[in-house]
Every structure is written in C-alpha cells, then in structure tokens.
Length: 115
Image 1 (cartoon, rainbow, N blue to C red):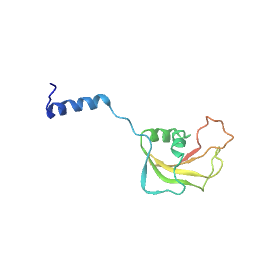
Image 2: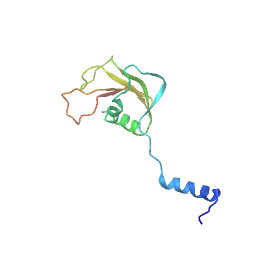
Image 3: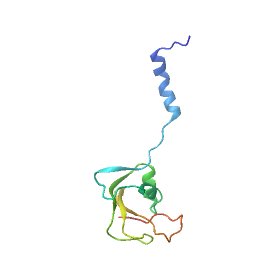
Image 4: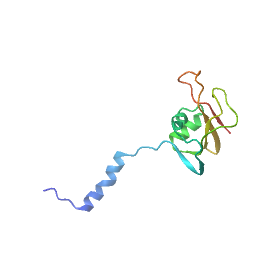
C-alpha cells in the first residue's frame, strides 16, 4: 500500500535534517600535548562560570583547548583559596581557572587569569 523507492526517501531526508537542526557542542578540545596531572573532574562547570567572559564564550562555542588538568603553582589571584588550577587556551591566550574561596558569595564567578 505505501511502497516507496529508496530514491524518494533520499530526496526527502536532507529537508528533514535541515528542519531538525543540530545541537551546538559545548566544551574545549584537548591539546595534542595535554597533560592530565589531577584531571578535569568538576572543571568544565568552573570554566562555564569563569570570571573571564571571553573564556566562557569560547567554552560555549567549543573554541578553547585544555592544556593541563588540575595542578598547582604560580600566582594565586584574589578569590582563590590556593594555587590549584587548570590551564586552558582561548584565542591565543593562556588562561588559568581556579577554584573559588569558600568565603565568596555562592554566585561569584571562578577566579581566572589570562595572559
């Protein structure tokens, strides 16, 4: 009763795909020289709520690169409890995203430095 040829289905498929659209990826890519150290558990949410607006935007558009997982060292910015951070690259700049100190407001963004 409803016999259709393969070519008729193939003709309709592109139209259906165009109507459905696609979800945009969110996140960062991994550098070929990525170093895991302490890993990335919990860090994507911190990047999403970073104090650096350009990094938040890059993360939303999958336009950033993970360089190194959680590690210590270097400068500790205001609002960070210690030097534990991850290293991410966006638009040719290297950013360090830190955990936030427990005395900050719940809605405060995560301290981030970009160079």
